[in-house]
Amino acid sequence: MHKRLFAAWPWMWVAVAWTVFVWVGRIRNLIADDEMSSAAKVGVSGLSASFLILCVLIVLGWTLGSTRLGALVLVMLGWNVVVWAVRVVDIAFLSDHEVPFIVVHTVLGLLSVGLWAVSWKTIPTES
Image 1 (cartoon, rainbow, N blue to C red):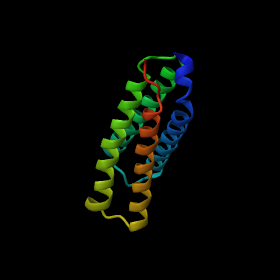
Image 2 (cartoon, rainbow, N blue to C red):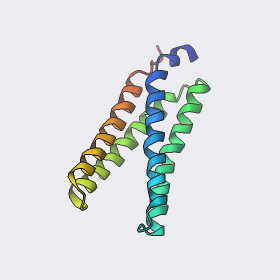
Image 3 (tube, rainbow, N blue to C red):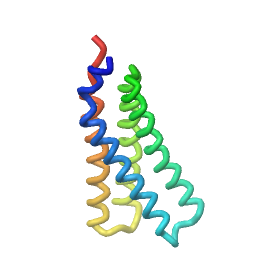
């Protein structure tokens, strides 16, 4: 089973690295934000942690050759779709942001969803 899972690793590693980059960056930004309330910081930290914990679980699943790896990647894909859909709508239409900020976050979301979709699609299925 582990050899068959190996075929999916390049996309999963790219998706994991991208996700860590995005959400650690978000934590770094919130630490530097003196205007954000403590409650908002807790919420953003929790959201970021949810992505980072899923990354850890996926890496562990891959390392251990788990038969549930596809399910973990599908959960990550679904979570990205939901979170980025909400974030992009909020950033683009409900908040006061400049166009470059909107474009950057839309691209972040599209890349995140796309990388996890490719990761999920490339996981071999049990025959």
